Image (cartoon, rainbow, N blue to C red; front, side):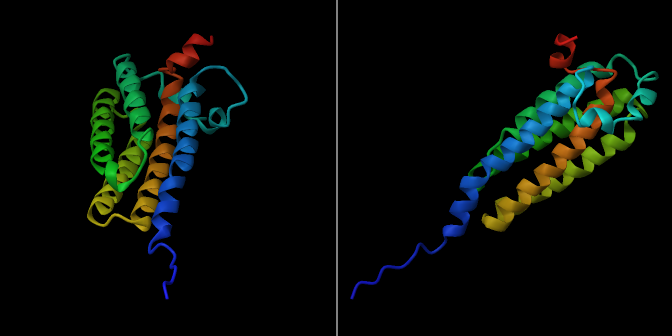
Length: 176
């Protein structure tokens, strides 16, 4: 009379095992955005920054270390494998990106203010999603955090594309 029943909650296991694939895609998008500052051609993000050249002439040179620090903190954030077990790491990495962004905002003045605000807003949404994941771990909260991270990647890509003409990434500088 023994009856075999399927696992009670297979959904979260399936979703958690698939999280790295979307994160890998997000990381690749971010890496591509970081390298779009040079004349490498063929990059989709290069066509998405028509106003970056206009913003760069008044940008103080002090922002380049801030842009580099932001790139590094974003790379760390996007390498997190989102799950209930990594919420603390995710939240700490969001705080690091927010601190890097705050320094950039201060040093850049009005340069890239729209892109900085967009990234700040996306980070706020990711922080809220991480808090929701901590409070109620499960499929929907993991999905929400992954989606929010996607928003951060899009906003970061726009900011780094704008900043790239003034502060190219090391990979773009090495290829010139």
